[in-house]
Amino acid sequence: MRMLRLGLAQINPTVGDLDGNVSRIRASIDQARSLGVELLAFPEMCVPGYPPEDLLLKPGFIQSCIERTRELAACTRGLTVVVGSLERDVDLYNSAAVLHDGRFVGTARKRYLPNYGVFDENRYFMAERRSLVFARDGMVFGINVCEDIWLAGGPSEEQVVRGGAEVILNLSASPYHAGKAGERRRMISTRAADNQAIVCYVNLVGAQDEIVFDGSSLIVDEHGRVLAEGAAFAEDLVVADVDLDEVFNARLHDPRLREERSLDESDPMPRIHLTDPGREPAGGAVATLTRPALAERAPREEVSESAEVYAALTLGVRDYVRKNGFQTVVLGLSGGIDSALTACLAVDALGAEHVVGVSLPSPYTSPASQEDAAALAKALGMRFQTIPIRDVMAAYEKALAPSFEGRTPDTTEENLQARIRGNALMALSNKFGWLVLTTGNKSEISVGYSTLYGDMAGGFAVLKDVYKSMVYQLAQHRNRRSDPPVIPQRTLTRAPSAELKPDQTDQDTLPPYDVLDPILRFYVEEDRSVKEIAGLGYDEELVRRVVGMVDRAEYKRRQSPPGLKISPRAFGKDRRLPITNRWMG
Image (tube, rainbow, N blue to C red; front, side):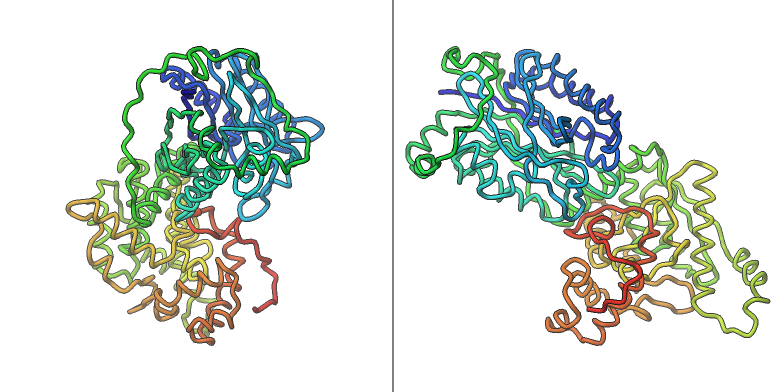
């Protein structure tokens, strides 16, 4: 048997923190060495952090990344390490550096640069045109980077057919959205089985601004079976032993690759030898490191979509707050479902001692809302205070009375309340250095059911990509985790209301959320036209009204704080429409 111990280090880097990122890489190398790992891979661009955006336009940043990557070679005595970084030649490349037994060997460059959704790689990088493979002690492995493996017949197939690769390493920084891990698993299993190769997929974990990376790294055998899987939303070192003779045997019994090679008239793929190609592996092994027994790793449990999204949001809050140097967050607790869920996520991410909830009652705030806000804060163990806004409202109304003379009250007075609350929360932020979390959901943000400089005022929008219907699902999921439940039942069952005027409910202005949310998905995430959505069974006039609200609210969204992406298409980098726009589709 030709045994190889593989390791995948899914780490949580911070963009621009080269010292911190390199320290994490060094620690993982030491851990892998203690476990007898022979071939260790790290995620895409884990030295600079991903995505570094316009830091890539700074020559000093580029040079520092390259230098720090090469310095890592000294830590690799006895093993081969592949680490995501940058490379500068006549242009800039997204690359994987290969470090072997204390020396820098070379790089494999990314060939396919994504330029859709949250990706802007054509802005920064040159695409490589060729692939290559590496050989070590009688085994051959190929390296490709993130997008490269998503293309059937792409670099992976070339590395197998033309390069003879038995193992494919894919270094990724693949952003999360609900259901993405399952899609990736199916794709990686297909690549492995189609190419009769062991495929190792190592993904970043952690959050960078609005993007969450879920980890979920994979080692898949030549039949497409998952041998080992990394944790979701947590750092992990995934280790597995693979038998390379099984790859050879599988290819003997299936002539497809042989036929492809016989038809391939191109030159053989360049092969970089890490060790003397004539040296035989000792004892039939690929390398000679001592391999201590691996602890049994329990199979990852299947989780519900609600549990998965909740974990993603929790990680996103924790990383945004901590990586930006904050210790404590503050949010308005209205007694409603959105602020309740935001408070739960903040407490689970940061600890109750680092979360402050503020009740800001107006004359229209019901006793039930105030009671539910206080009950939630007590159940979570978070700090809680009350700042009534009645007197401030009266002062505003008095000051504006001469200007408003002769005009009846309308949404202007309603929005004043939201802006007073925003001012109060921002004052606490300024005084104590707390980060304000806004609590608006994707349904409201889509149609502009929010107040600019009011409930939109803050530093981070936790639920920006979470539809109202999903808010209820997540709240119920959180309640199932606690005994007794932390979110009051009345919060879950009362009709949602902004409480900015007597007897107000959201449905005074908006369609029911079970009707609104599907229309928004079709329009915002799938770009379907009014007629197409109406053809799916929705009233055309209603669809036209909703679409008009979405389009008119674009100027608000441009001024909203960043928020976490958990859907295939979120507001922000994913969806970029002009504010000045007369198209109505």
